[in-house]
Image (cartoon, rainbow, N blue to C red; front, side, top):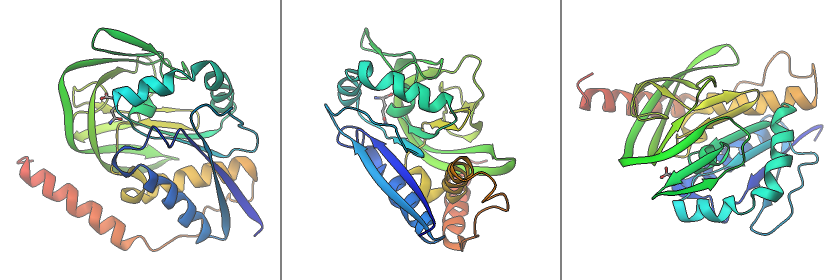
Length: 249
Ligand code: GLN
């Protein structure tokens, strides 16, 4: 195969809630269907990170306990991850992964120092924010509606960062129901589980295309080979319609 991408899955042994692993399967398949070989490597507990040759980084969700365990690797992983993100490396960080990208996560009176890649702070609030969510976003100049499922106690203050999108229904980053996630350079951080990529092929392709453009400048300027996403889009439309009806919207 002429083209290849390396996907780096960070702490899959700890951050693996709500089928976040499905995100990896989607990246692999959507690459393969276009003749792009996707290799997946993992960074597990206690291993030394190696970001050389990495094209897409994935961080999934996890409970407070698992998040605490991952935060203990801050000294080894924060700096290379920051350098990777700053250099335009493509990253998808979900829920606990989203919070870990920030400065700190505070829960039960305890503050966990996170990776400090994004200037965002998360504090756990009264009650968990659970349910389906839809977000209006713009990815690579294209308007898309992202659908997902959120379950977080943390409320994230994104300060001066650019949100991933506007909440159509659901709680979003800080629970106010206004905005959700962060987009910074080629990093997308979000509370959307589900997992997010099977439900949102547009986001999967945005990550793949951005990573290919970065690795092979000019070779994908005409975009990716389109795939038949009829079923995926129908499923998404259905669940958004069902949720809107249930909420009387
Ligand atoms: N522990 C975090 C919270 O509850 C993240 C949970 C998750 O990844 N779903 O806010």
